[in-house]
Image (cartoon, rainbow, N blue to C red; front, side):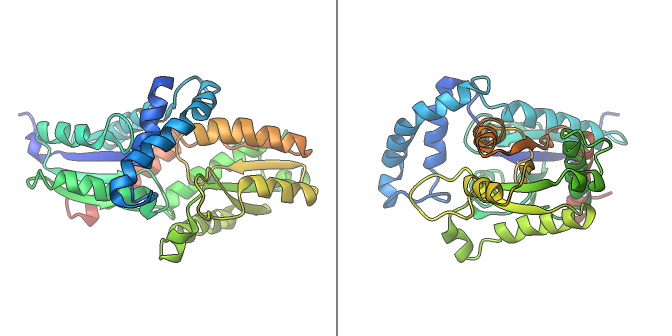
Length: 336
């Protein structure tokens, strides 16, 4: 007998999204800057007009950056692949789970994802933010918007996982990528001792955030440091932390990755392995900012810069997501 669809558990992977073509860059930026939970552009009635202006002014330069990485963001495709791999792992023992994708600022939008989940007859939904470290600007904004949409579907029971920065399997997955990254310097087996022999320095580069958010109690930096401390217990290599991808005239977290590169050059660092600590999928921040912009800047400073591979669909990362989901199911008391 076919399993009742109402017994199934939906898992919604939530991420930022990204333009899937050069023509999509300006509307994507408009959606991003229209979100007052990320940045407030004057009084509420001016938010969208100013978002339109900023997106129009910035779209040309941003399109040029996307053109250098294939003319689109791969994050939508990668997130769908993560969902497929996660669903396969979750359903190895029983066909209980249906994993889907919802993006905050580009397709498939939350509205479409929630409607499809309801149409499938799913009435238990686990929402998993793909931002490991909680911030009101990322997970907070996404869940706030998602809960408003879900209020129209009162028959769906919802449980959200807001952060998982210290999940043991996630830490193991990151550690594995770091050890593999060491090998790009010709360090043989990719061990800590080999890294020290070649004076490899780790640079954890996280997405920046306005300082005001932290002053108001946002736990983002604490979560980032929690991940780094857990990694430092596994891999004993000198490290630094910096922040990338800032935009706008407000004060942002420091040091910036650009500033850190200059500082490390002054300290005579020659081999630098960058770990995109707050990103689980390749996007413009990894493929353009780190791989092109920062790599060229580092070369000009006499530093060889390499980057750890993004987690994407690495098997140990999918295993981490499975672990996070199963723990979330227990928290929701949906486990059989």
